[in-house]
Image (cartoon, rainbow, N blue to C red; front, side, top):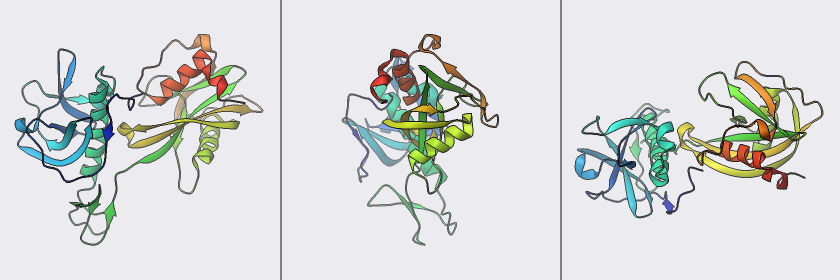
Length: 270
């Protein structure tokens, strides 16, 4: 998955000054400023930009800072979805994670309590206001659900956005556990009950500021799918032979579908 990189990811907040060779991440909406040279993903360095802001994180010994810039030379704004699939895994992860942080900074320039300008905390990764309001990075818990029934898996297509087959998914609501979210989202989207929930793995998903929790489970009782057409275009049961795409090495969704296709999911269920 996108977070499976060879170098250590250091996300601790710290006060550090940028050096000329450090990388700068600039974000506009869901796009990151970068260039591709000889199949390598390149970010501008501190020496190339006039505006360099807060330290973001490090990947191995490489430090990343926030910045602002228009396109220049061969640097253009690349959609984070495209960057996430780049073969240079560490830089792909940096691009998506940087976009997550930079969008949060941009959305919290002013205090939601009193309207005054927010400032970077000197002691932790937070935006603070003189009125006492403290805002931390936006991380939305959500579930990804692989529902199994009679050797088949339930795949869905959204009405808008992601155009490919995916798993049932949704955000946690106030006051519920992630397990309760699984039951609610499955019932809302495809109208069935599930049992034998088994947690599989989590994934940070910066493109939607989410932390995804992957579950395998089994349909209980009637497995007739009733599609919520407000969210979904369609939903179907698939056998392993009917799945014609492979793990993209990026998303939790594709990895879980791959486990079903290979049969390895059977070790996770009773």
